[in-house]
Image: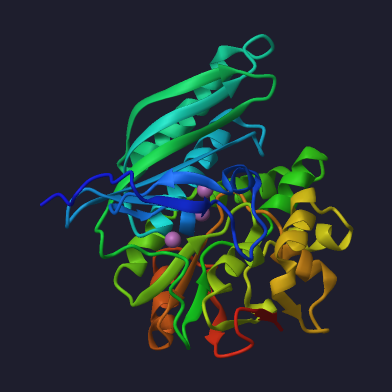
Length: 348
Ligand code: CO
Ligand code: CO
Ligand code: CO
């Protein structure tokens, strides 16, 4: 049975205003605007998550997301794969199954050959195919800077939505991809990365979070997000703030690219990492033993990063073992949900 549809009489005031977390550009633009209330909107702008969720029936909801960005690698096919894997990831982070996608493209048609765009889209299509997703359309604008991504729609059961907001005491936090892709992308642009590293990082960024998501379905997962532009600590802050709990992170347990750690020590750090620390660093306490380079890596903006999964304590070891058995070898328990300090992250 389909639930009652839109009631325009009630509005969501203050949509987009993040109470404690510093808002992004779109949040600022939306802050204070009246948005129509709809009881079938299960996850929307007032409690923004990885994706929005809209209930169609008691058994079915749509989960929708959009991501696009400029290239972080030179190979067009790889860029297409990474952009698609990144866009699909928000559906997996909600526990959904992606079904359809549309290309979103900004292309410098006056200076770039159309065959490059064709190859980018081929890369994206290869990941859509792997994900079982159908390409149903898209939109292109001419722009001086190339950008590519997808808007993705998936299915999800209205009572089985994984948000960022459901940490439980004792939960263990599991990360499924290494950190450092922002620093490495900076090194690639500066011509410092060798081909072996570029291949390794490209492969990781192009890997669908589908496989980790399929495995976590069999465990008592309380909350989940994926690590992208706000970095590990920025996205973790979204889980922790207003949770009523604190989180302890063991810095040495967090999987990282060793090359990124070396470049961070040399100061090769993207501007986004500083922004992330400025925006969300207020929720983090570092022990004196945590080196500056490690702190910088924990704020490094990621492209198509891993899932950050909060799982019941007693199942954490077996979830990690299951992830490793399926080839997600860097999967590790990186922290724990504790009573205090409330709404804060302690990195030791
Ligand atoms: Co996300
Ligand atoms: Co996103
Ligand atoms: Co989520």
